[in-house]
Image: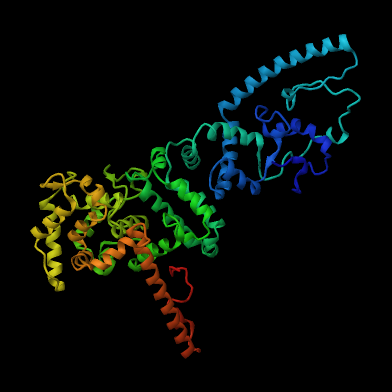
Length: 534
């Protein structure tokens, strides 16, 4: 806390005051803050500079340290809401009633004192400090300093600052009654909402980009800062908002590890060690894969674009289902619109995938061993939407796979043999159909994705049929927590090697043709254009 009288700000009116004069400051500052209820004492009027708010945010409020600026702004905004609302009016009415009673008692005490002990000076009670009503003045032995008799033009430094009284009100209203998860949820969401949307995360990711040493190199690349923020937020919704409503509830926050991961990224200097949500390498892999498919640079992936994913590993049937039925992360947030005939326009166009939609797809495709991806693919292959995957549906998908395996010269596995093998691995409750719960049982966690690969990913299914037991054992014993972490690590190294090779080739061309114009240099993709991914 900083005493307003000791502020170093050039705009402060209190730089010329002596410490002895600060006893009179509450009466002046309370007028500025328009509220006597939370500014009753000198300590209440001390303010907390935003640069010193970081420690308070982390140690007292139990938020990550880079939350301090958004929290500071939230307290100021809440204070403005308080001053313009009914609560402020009720508090002031209650305060005035109590002050009237205290002044009445003080007057009676003063009269009794003068009659019984004449000459003793009257002292103001703490509750009287800061009131705008007429107050008993000190006696002649304690004159009011001349420089305090004139009004102060600027009661506090600008921009607005949080006083202890303002923080105290926010603490008792928003933080003290709640545990860590509830505090986190209440800070993220808007005050009038009961859920968190993707826009609510942007201020906090922006502060992370500004403060984290592992992201400092992005400081001059605003476009990629935005893409990184979108990637982090979409990954959060992928893991936390399991119903894909685009709205995170307090219950979902409590069941997730989101707060602990925010604390982890706050304490870890290597951003890539925080593999959940925040890893820059994971963002690099996701965005480069999107960039490779988006040839026309309109930030939209068409069906033809997606067919090229992973060396054309996906069948056209599953690609169609991805566009028609796969969950869209923020579909529920768009407003309902009507066309000229009064028909409802679909909330999200199903003719393309946005970058956020692509993130959902890629996370699900490269790690089929988690609940989110299982539900994602089950919704795609459940063509009739009855929450049951029957033999007819599986046979229709596998027929396309058979044709592709034949064309590629691979050994063909009959549908009955494949189905028998998968049933032995999954052990469903019914032999007639599969439900999503069959895939989510503990013994299925590592094999649940194999059936999906058999139905629509020919490369992964062939790899499964030709798998090396030794490699599978090494895979189980490595340090990666998930299949996505393993894939992202290998793919990032591949992309990094390709980038190094391109740079070496560009330098070689430049060395051999030093007098060529810039057009040839630009044709190598090394011009530094904002269109290049990195």
